[in-house]
Image (cartoon, rainbow, N blue to C red; front, side, top):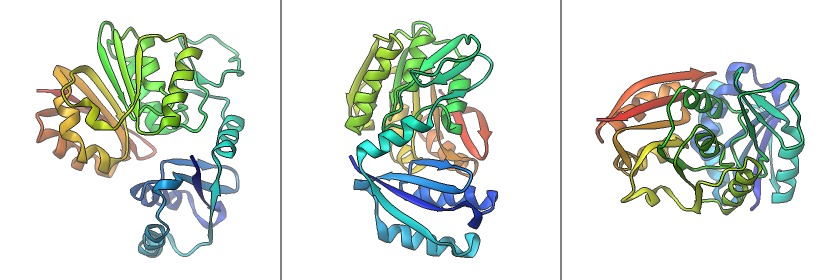
Length: 279
C-alpha cells in the first residue's frame, strides 16, 4: 500500500503551531506524524488522501498557522517500511515498560519488554496516545479477561494485554498490512492467545469483552460508539484515545448516550486518553 507524505520546514512553524497543524491534518485522515531537527512530516494512506481537502484545510488554517511552503510525495510501501525501521529503536514508557525494535538491546532490565517491528503500522510506543494507553493498562487487572484491540496497527496493545494475563484477545484492523504486522509481532513476543482479523469496528456486533481498547480517529470513534458500547460487558472497561483534549467532551457525550460512564481522562502534549465503565 502506498502512503502520501506531507512535509514542511520546521523553521516555518513554532512548537505551538506544529501541534495545531497536527490537529488540522488529523481531521482529514493523516495518522502518523514525525519531527526531526529540521523537518515536520505527516503520513496518510494513499487511498485516503484527498488533495482538495488538504488545500481547503490549509486555507482554513492560514489565519492561525500563517502561510508556509509544503510538499506532498508518494511513498511506496517498501520505502515507508524502511524509514520506520531505520528510525525506531525503542520507546521507554516508564520505569517498568519498554517498547523496542527486535535488534535493540536495552541497558537495563524492564518488567515488561515489548518487542515491536513497526513495519508500516502505527503503534511503536513513541506516540503520546500509545504511551498513555500502555501506562493505563499497566495499572489494570487483565488476568482472565477478554480483550478487543480495535484498529490494532502493530498489535502492541493486544500484545501487552496478553502479557498482563488476558485470557483472550481479538485484534483487528481494516489494513491487511497491519494484520500481517500484528501476527509478526505476536511471534516476536511469544503471544499465542490473539485472534487477528482484517475487519472494521462492526466486527464487534454481537460480541462481548471485559476490556476494549481503541486508539482511533475521533470521528470514527463517535460514528461507531454504538458498536463499542454494546460490546463492553457489564462493569467492563472501554479505553479510547487518538484525539485531543478539546475533543473529550464530544467523545464523552457520545459514550454517555450509550450507557458508558467516564471515570478518568489523562493527557500528554494535548493528546488524551479517556476511560469509560459500562453502567
